[in-house]
Image 1 (cartoon, helix red, strand yellow):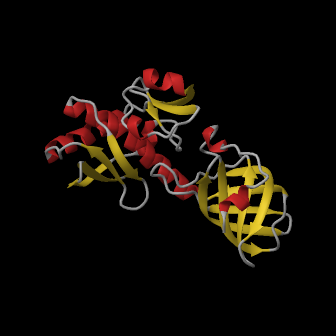
Image 2 (cartoon, helix red, strand yellow):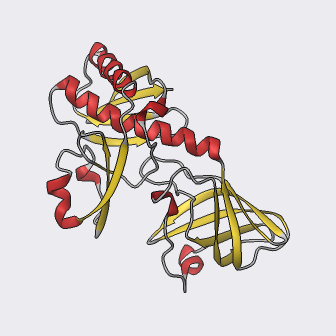
Image 3 (cartoon, rainbow, N blue to C red):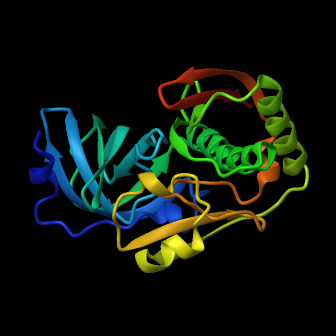
Length: 249
């Protein structure tokens, strides 16, 4: 299916998970329905609480249902300015109008904890190594990892960074976010570890834990780092131009 056909005639939909990532249910408007076959279907809702696969964060799953129909959403995609839902019809025939979105909360909350913990490790690793760090990529799904540029540090230093992270988690610092223009990005987020990997946008969302450095990120995060629980160092490995750290909760 050509996604240009799916989004054709639609205005970009708004990510409600930016306002409140804890929303499990969302009464919203189903603006477009495009069938791939008898059961597989693409949906565009606005606003939406479904987070797409993006920036190392797996896509949300869940359901969209309305009067007389229900669709199991197993994939959420970001395409151009749109968030597109894809799933299988459970029963009935989906049609435009008022619907309810329901996300798989267990998955979402796990991703929120891992995402927030990843940002916190960026901070503690920077403190432990005593230098600016730069991320290469990350993955918040199974085999959760973060990749950094540079030579692989001694394992003792990586474990020390995780220990420092766990001590900060006990302090229960608040996580906040705000939007800034591209013109303000370099000044306000100059220590963001992913700065060189950011796409060119008009507006960026900056995430901050306590008074630590701002990190440009569009993902979902906790309100307080105390919700992370405890971060467990699994292993590390060298990779081309950098190293990868595997973690668990």
